[in-house]
Image (cartoon, rainbow, N blue to C red; front, side, top):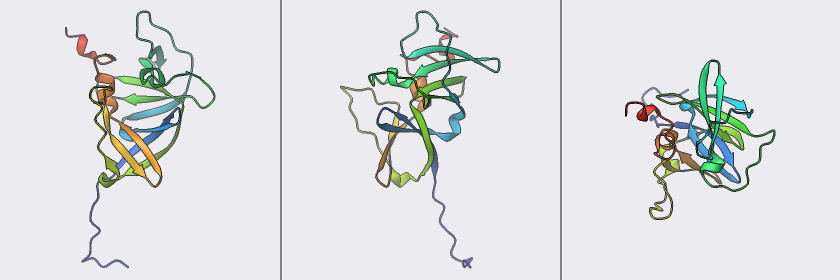
Length: 162
């Protein structure tokens, strides 16, 4: 039995949904995830960037679908039985992300998260939260809100007021 005089110190723990793109593992804040769906045909919208695959109607709400492999320039795009759409509830809307697959949910303490390397001249990394390490695994932690709000994606409603 635990001695009540020795409380266990509280450690902040963040949970991340782990997904794969190619051979890399990525993590996003589990609290942003609404649901995970199998990939289905989308309705293509003219004059959108290649990484925006189109939209789906999800219970009456129109949801833009982003293919992160295209967005991150990861080469060959292949849809198979493992390809899924992670539907995210962001502040302003629902957004779907096509990924190669999801594996699990990991809890990381602040000590397991390292700052993202700064590639300022060669790569835009403003949407990276850092790198998470668990045993021999390394996760690229993505700030999905920042990614979706980035100018090239323009998936938020900020242009409506303009």
